[in-house]
Length: 198
Image (cartoon, one colour):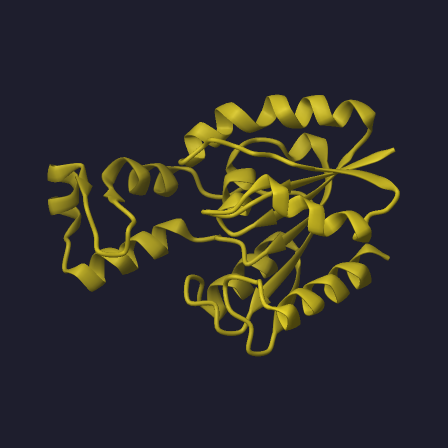
């Protein structure tokens, strides 16, 4: 029996994997309730879980938002046959620099302070910025991407460039946003996944 592994986004839960069970009735669908807050922590945490799950065969990965970024940074490609990414974060450097610009924070200031609190609820971190700069994404898994037209975290040209560079298919939901959660969005997601699984 094949295995489907689900990685949630920030503030999400492994319980979200339940939604995907009807879409993969012949597979074991599991959610990883990971603890990692950074890509380097994911690199330590994810491989053992994926290796264990792969003992029953190759894995289909479903990953949401930052979960997709962590997956791509964690070295688990050898276990994954194909992937479905929902609103994946693919340019953390650009996102961090955008936050810094909006707050008037310079790189020199961030480097000096190490961490700067923000009103967004996300700390700016020099270690995080340095890490993502020095660890570009190298993802070699057949991947389908679902992206909302009005995703406020990843510009359309960025997701298109990523899809082109990695040979991924890209589906854009008209009117969709970063967080797929409304009834219409989830219906669109389900139909997309059914089509791409054929």
